[in-house]
Length: 337
Image (tube, rainbow, N blue to C red; front, side, top):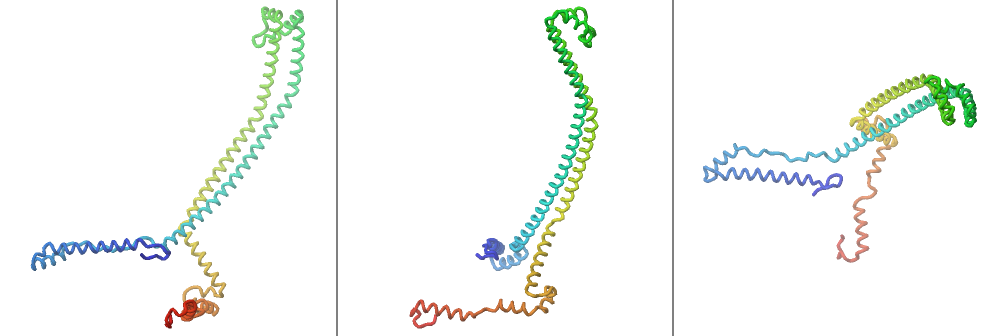
C-alpha cells in the first residue's frame, strides 16, 4: 500500500485497482461464454467467433479517482477559512457600530426624559406654591371649627346656634337643613361632629382636584411635546438601524471566495517580494525572462552555497567504515566492508 504526499495511506488507489481487475475479469468471462456456447465444432467455432465480434460487449469504463486532490482541498480550506475570518471581522465591526448607534440613541433618549422630568417637576412646584396659602388657610379654619364643635358637645344652646347659622352649609348639595334635620343635629352632638368632618373632607378633596386640574393643564402640552420628540427619535433610530443593516449586508456580500483568494495571493506575492528584496534583487527580476537574465551575483552565490555539499558521499562512507572497524576488529576476515 502506497502513501500520498502528506503521509496518509491512499486506500482509494487500492479500491481502484480492485475495480479494474473485476471489470477485466467480467469482460473476459463474457467473451469466453459467448464463444463456448456455439463452439461445438470447427464451423461452430468460426461462427461463434464472427458473431462474438458483433455481440454487444460490456463497454470499457476507465476507473479513475475523481476525488479532489489533497493540495486542492487544503488550498480551498485555507481560502474558506480566510473568507470566514473576513466575514467574522466584518460582523465584529458591524456589532461595534450597532453598539455605538444604540449608545447615541440611549444618550439622546435619557436627555429627553431628563428635560421632560425637569419641566414636569417645575410645573408641580409652581402649582404647589400657588396652592400652599390656600391649604394653610383651609387647615387653620377647619382646625378652629373642629375645636368649636368639640366644645359644643356639652352645650345644647351653642349647638343650636351653630346649626342655625350653618344651616345651608350643613345641608350641602341637597339644600338647607329641614326642621327635623336641625333638631336631629342639635340633639346628637356626635352626628353634628361627623357632619362637620365630612364637610372638611369634601373641602380638602375639592382643593386637591382643583390643584390636579391646574397641574394637568400645565403638564399636558409638555407630555404631548415629549411624545412627539420621542416618536421622532424612535423613527430616526429605526432609519439608522435599517441603513446599518443594508450597509452590513452589502459589505458582507462583497466578501466572497474570490475576494479571499485574491487577498491570499496578494499576501504571498508581497512576502515573496520582501524575501527577494532582502537578498538584493530588484522588482524587474521577479517575473518572466527578466528574472533569469538579471539575477544578481549575491543571489547566485547564496544559491551555490546552499546547494554545494560540504563533503562528498565517498568521504562519509570511508568515515563510517573506519568507525565500524574500530568497534568490530577482525570480524571482516581481512575484507573491506
